[in-house]
Length: 166
Ligand code: HEC
Image (cartoon, rainbow, N blue to C red; front, side, top):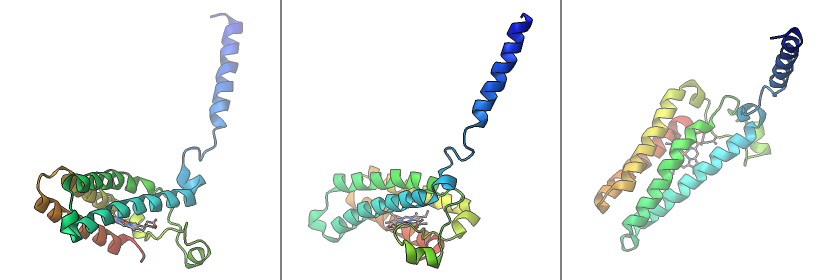
Protein backbone atom coordinates (compact mmCIF):
# COMPACT_ATOMS: atom_id res chain seq x y z
CA UNK A 1 0.00 0.00 0.00
CA UNK A 2 1.56 3.36 -0.94
CA UNK A 3 1.58 6.24 1.48
CA UNK A 4 -1.04 8.34 -0.31
CA UNK A 5 -3.48 5.46 -0.40
CA UNK A 6 -2.91 4.69 3.29
CA UNK A 7 -3.52 8.32 4.17
CA UNK A 8 -6.70 8.37 2.09
CA UNK A 9 -7.92 5.21 3.82
CA UNK A 10 -7.45 6.86 7.18
CA UNK A 11 -9.44 9.89 6.00
CA UNK A 12 -12.14 7.64 4.58
CA UNK A 13 -12.38 5.65 7.82
CA UNK A 14 -12.60 8.85 9.82
CA UNK A 15 -15.35 10.10 7.51
CA UNK A 16 -17.38 6.91 7.78
CA UNK A 17 -17.03 6.88 11.57
CA UNK A 18 -18.25 10.44 11.49
CA UNK A 19 -21.35 9.43 9.48
CA UNK A 20 -22.16 6.62 11.93
CA UNK A 21 -21.65 9.09 14.80
CA UNK A 22 -24.31 11.36 13.29
CA UNK A 23 -27.12 8.80 13.53
CA UNK A 24 -29.34 10.21 16.28
CA UNK A 25 -28.92 8.20 19.51
CA UNK A 26 -32.70 7.64 19.70
CA UNK A 27 -32.98 6.35 16.13
CA UNK A 28 -35.36 3.38 16.21
CA UNK A 29 -35.86 3.78 19.96
CA UNK A 30 -39.46 4.91 19.69
CA UNK A 31 -40.03 4.47 23.43
CA UNK A 32 -37.67 7.44 23.82
CA UNK A 33 -38.53 9.55 20.77
CA UNK A 34 -42.29 8.82 20.45
CA UNK A 35 -43.57 7.37 23.76
CA UNK A 36 -47.15 8.56 23.28
CA UNK A 37 -47.34 6.96 19.83
CA UNK A 38 -46.11 3.64 21.27
CA UNK A 39 -48.78 3.79 23.98
CA UNK A 40 -51.43 4.65 21.38
CA UNK A 41 -50.35 1.68 19.22
CA UNK A 42 -50.54 -0.83 22.09
CA UNK A 43 -53.94 0.50 23.17
CA UNK A 44 -55.26 0.16 19.61
CA UNK A 45 -53.80 -3.36 19.48
CA UNK A 46 -55.61 -4.22 22.73
CA UNK A 47 -58.85 -2.75 21.32
CA UNK A 48 -58.43 -5.10 18.35
CA UNK A 49 -57.97 -8.03 20.73
CA UNK A 50 -61.12 -6.99 22.60
CA UNK A 51 -63.16 -6.72 19.38
CA UNK A 52 -62.24 -10.27 18.44
CA UNK A 53 -63.03 -11.46 21.97
CA UNK A 54 -66.44 -9.73 21.88
CA UNK A 55 -67.24 -11.52 18.62
CA UNK A 56 -66.39 -14.87 20.21
CA UNK A 57 -68.35 -14.17 23.42
CA UNK A 58 -71.33 -12.94 21.38
CA UNK A 59 -71.37 -16.22 19.45
CA UNK A 60 -71.08 -18.27 22.62
CA UNK A 61 -73.98 -16.37 24.25
CA UNK A 62 -76.27 -17.13 21.30
CA UNK A 63 -75.59 -20.81 20.54
CA UNK A 64 -77.65 -20.69 17.33
CA UNK A 65 -75.09 -18.25 15.90
CA UNK A 66 -72.07 -20.32 16.85
CA UNK A 67 -69.80 -20.95 13.89
CA UNK A 68 -66.69 -22.88 14.99
CA UNK A 69 -64.52 -22.01 11.99
CA UNK A 70 -65.26 -18.29 12.35
CA UNK A 71 -64.72 -18.44 16.11
CA UNK A 72 -61.38 -20.15 15.51
CA UNK A 73 -60.32 -17.34 13.14
CA UNK A 74 -61.03 -14.76 15.86
CA UNK A 75 -59.03 -16.81 18.36
CA UNK A 76 -56.13 -16.97 15.90
CA UNK A 77 -56.18 -13.17 15.49
CA UNK A 78 -56.12 -12.76 19.26
CA UNK A 79 -53.17 -15.12 19.57
CA UNK A 80 -51.06 -13.22 17.02
CA UNK A 81 -51.89 -9.87 18.61
CA UNK A 82 -51.13 -11.06 22.15
CA UNK A 83 -47.77 -12.32 20.95
CA UNK A 84 -46.82 -8.80 19.80
CA UNK A 85 -48.42 -6.89 22.67
CA UNK A 86 -45.67 -7.18 25.34
CA UNK A 87 -43.07 -5.92 22.86
CA UNK A 88 -44.79 -2.53 22.91
CA UNK A 89 -43.68 -1.65 26.46
CA UNK A 90 -40.19 -0.15 26.05
CA UNK A 91 -38.77 1.89 28.91
CA UNK A 92 -40.09 5.45 28.67
CA UNK A 93 -43.71 4.43 28.05
CA UNK A 94 -44.91 4.36 31.68
CA UNK A 95 -46.65 7.66 30.98
CA UNK A 96 -49.63 7.70 33.36
CA UNK A 97 -50.38 10.63 35.64
CA UNK A 98 -53.77 11.96 36.70
CA UNK A 99 -52.93 15.29 35.05
CA UNK A 100 -52.03 13.64 31.72
CA UNK A 101 -55.13 11.44 31.92
CA UNK A 102 -57.33 14.55 32.31
CA UNK A 103 -55.51 16.28 29.50
CA UNK A 104 -55.41 13.44 26.94
CA UNK A 105 -57.29 10.29 27.99
CA UNK A 106 -56.94 8.89 24.47
CA UNK A 107 -53.15 8.78 24.60
CA UNK A 108 -52.25 8.29 28.26
CA UNK A 109 -51.21 4.77 29.29
CA UNK A 110 -53.41 2.89 31.74
CA UNK A 111 -50.68 0.33 32.41
CA UNK A 112 -49.44 0.16 36.01
CA UNK A 113 -45.73 0.70 36.75
CA UNK A 114 -45.66 -2.97 37.88
CA UNK A 115 -45.38 -3.88 34.17
CA UNK A 116 -41.79 -2.62 34.18
CA UNK A 117 -41.01 -3.80 37.73
CA UNK A 118 -41.98 -7.44 37.10
CA UNK A 119 -41.70 -7.48 33.33
CA UNK A 120 -40.85 -11.20 33.08
CA UNK A 121 -44.14 -12.10 34.75
CA UNK A 122 -46.04 -9.67 32.50
CA UNK A 123 -44.33 -11.12 29.44
CA UNK A 124 -45.08 -14.73 30.51
CA UNK A 125 -48.74 -13.89 31.03
CA UNK A 126 -49.02 -12.38 27.54
CA UNK A 127 -47.38 -15.45 26.04
CA UNK A 128 -49.56 -17.86 28.03
CA UNK A 129 -52.73 -16.01 26.94
CA UNK A 130 -51.49 -16.03 23.34
CA UNK A 131 -50.93 -19.80 23.58
CA UNK A 132 -54.43 -20.40 24.97
CA UNK A 133 -55.90 -18.41 22.07
CA UNK A 134 -53.75 -20.39 19.62
CA UNK A 135 -54.95 -23.67 21.19
CA UNK A 136 -58.55 -22.48 20.79
CA UNK A 137 -57.88 -21.69 17.12
CA UNK A 138 -56.92 -25.33 16.53
CA UNK A 139 -59.65 -27.31 18.31
CA UNK A 140 -62.08 -29.58 16.51
CA UNK A 141 -65.01 -29.45 18.93
CA UNK A 142 -67.23 -26.64 20.20
CA UNK A 143 -67.03 -27.73 23.85
CA UNK A 144 -63.21 -27.58 23.70
CA UNK A 145 -63.46 -24.10 22.20
CA UNK A 146 -65.78 -22.90 24.98
CA UNK A 147 -63.51 -24.25 27.70
CA UNK A 148 -60.44 -22.52 26.21
CA UNK A 149 -62.39 -19.27 25.77
CA UNK A 150 -63.27 -19.25 29.48
CA UNK A 151 -59.61 -19.94 30.27
CA UNK A 152 -58.56 -17.06 27.98
CA UNK A 153 -61.06 -14.67 29.54
CA UNK A 154 -59.69 -15.52 32.97
CA UNK A 155 -56.17 -14.73 31.68
CA UNK A 156 -57.34 -11.35 30.30
CA UNK A 157 -58.96 -10.46 33.63
CA UNK A 158 -56.12 -11.58 35.89
CA UNK A 159 -53.53 -9.67 33.87
CA UNK A 160 -55.69 -6.54 34.03
CA UNK A 161 -56.09 -6.85 37.80
CA UNK A 162 -52.31 -6.94 38.20
CA UNK A 163 -51.13 -4.61 35.45
CA UNK A 164 -53.93 -2.22 34.41
CA UNK A 165 -55.08 0.79 36.41
CA UNK A 166 -58.86 0.59 35.89
C1 HEC B 1 -50.30 -9.71 29.75
C2 HEC B 1 -51.33 -8.86 30.27
C3 HEC B 1 -52.62 -8.67 29.52
C4 HEC B 1 -53.39 -9.63 28.92
C5 HEC B 1 -53.16 -11.14 28.84
C6 HEC B 1 -54.53 -8.94 28.36
N1 HEC B 1 -54.43 -7.59 28.60
FE1 HEC B 1 -55.75 -6.17 28.00
N2 HEC B 1 -54.50 -4.72 28.74
C7 HEC B 1 -53.35 -4.94 29.44
C8 HEC B 1 -52.74 -3.67 29.78
C9 HEC B 1 -51.43 -3.48 30.55
C10 HEC B 1 -53.56 -2.68 29.26
C11 HEC B 1 -53.32 -1.16 29.35
C12 HEC B 1 -52.40 -0.71 28.20
C13 HEC B 1 -52.07 0.78 28.27
O1 HEC B 1 -53.01 1.59 28.49
O2 HEC B 1 -50.89 1.14 28.07
C14 HEC B 1 -54.69 -3.37 28.63
C15 HEC B 1 -55.77 -2.74 28.02
C16 HEC B 1 -56.91 -3.38 27.54
C17 HEC B 1 -58.07 -2.71 27.02
C18 HEC B 1 -58.26 -1.20 26.91
C19 HEC B 1 -57.75 -0.75 25.52
C20 HEC B 1 -57.83 0.78 25.34
O3 HEC B 1 -58.74 1.22 24.63
O4 HEC B 1 -57.01 1.50 25.89
C21 HEC B 1 -58.98 -3.69 26.66
C22 HEC B 1 -60.38 -3.48 26.08
C23 HEC B 1 -58.35 -4.97 26.92
N3 HEC B 1 -57.09 -4.74 27.47
C24 HEC B 1 -58.93 -6.20 26.66
C25 HEC B 1 -58.26 -7.43 26.79
C26 HEC B 1 -58.82 -8.72 26.44
C27 HEC B 1 -60.21 -8.95 25.86
C28 HEC B 1 -57.87 -9.65 26.72
C29 HEC B 1 -57.91 -11.15 26.54
C30 HEC B 1 -58.28 -11.70 25.27
C31 HEC B 1 -56.71 -8.95 27.26
N4 HEC B 1 -56.99 -7.61 27.29
C32 HEC B 1 -55.56 -9.57 27.68
C33 HEC B 1 -52.81 -6.16 29.77
C34 HEC B 1 -53.28 -7.39 29.33
